[in-house]
Image (cartoon, chains in turn brown, orange, cyan):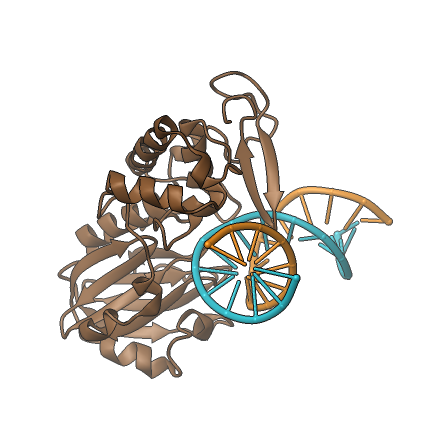
Length: 281
DNA sequence: GTTTAACCCTGCACGC
DNA sequence: TGCGTGCAGGGTTAAA
C-alpha cells in the first residue's frame, strides 16, 4: 500500500510527466465504486467540469496526500488509500479493471486512476478552499517536507504515553508513515512496537529520529515497496524495489538480518506488526 | 488521553 | 472445480 515514499515517487513522476499538460476532458467512469472515489462531490459534473480545459502547474505532497495544482486556481487532491494508483498511458491503451477516473490529456495521453479496493479518494477544490480541507488541516509534520525539529519530536514522545507503533502511524503527529515503514523504522531504531512513547531514553529517541529519515529516503531511492497482493505500481505500472530490502515487514519466521532470530508477528485489531524479539526492546 | 473495534472494499488463501 | 468464509489494510469515528 502506498505510504510516503510511494506517494513521493508518484509526485516526482507526475511533476515531470504532466506539468504543462492540459486536460482535454475529465471522466468519472461508471464502475461500481467510481462515485465512492469522488465521494466528496454529489455529482460527476462537480468533479469533471472544473478540471476540463485546465493545465497542470505543480504537483505537491503532504503526507500521503497529493495536490495537483491547475490553472484557474483549482487543485485536484488525491489520497491513494490502500490500492489506488495513477497510471499514465496512451489514450488507446486498454482500460484495466477498477479504473474509476480518466483524465484525457492533450498529446494522446490518459492519466487514469485505478483502485481495486476503492479506499482512495479524489476531489477538486479551489486554492482558497484547500486551506479548509479538514483532512489536510489535521496532518502533523511531513518528515521530508518540514524536517522534524528535535525539540518537537522529543517533547511529543515524552508528553504522550501511547505505544510507539500507534504514535508513528498517527498522521496528526507525523504524516506519511503507515504499517510497512513504521515496522521498518522501529526495527532500525531497536525499539519494540508496544513500548510506551514516554519510556524512551534520549539515545533511543535520537536513533528513532534518524531512522525515520534514513528509512524513508532509502525507500524512495529504491522506488518504493511493492509487497502486498495489491502491489504498489508507479505511474508507468512498474513495481518498486524496496521489498527486497525489508528487514521485518512480512518476514514472520524469517531470520533477522542482524541477529538471525526468527522475526515475530503481533496483532492488534486487524493490523499486523513484525519485529525482531531480540534486537527490539 | 488512550485503546479497541467497526466500517468501507476487493482479492486471495483456505477448507470443505 | 467451486463455493463460502475469513483476513488484510488506511483512515475515520464511536464506544469503552
